[in-house]
Length: 90
Image (tube, rainbow, N blue to C red; front, side, top):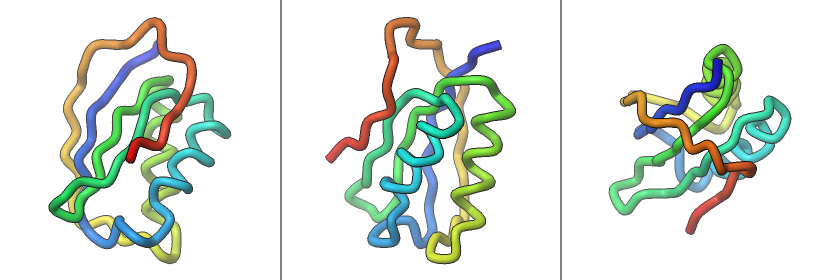
C-alpha cells in the first residue's frame, strides 16, 4: 500500500550529501517526493511509496558515514497520485 510522510530531520544533515543521497535511495527504492534544506539547518522531506521502502530509505540515510541524524519528526499526509519523480528542491 502506498503511503506518504512529511519528515523534518535534524542533526548533521546539511553539507554532507544528504539531498544527493536521498535522491539516489529514492530512485533505487521506487520512492517519489522531494527533499530540501531548511534555514535552521534541518532537512525537510516528503516521501511517498511502500512504507517498508520508506523505512529502508531512512535507515540507509542514517547509516551513511557522513550523515548523523539526531531527531526525526514524521507526519502521515495524503498521497499525491500524480507524483512520478523525486526532486531535490533548493
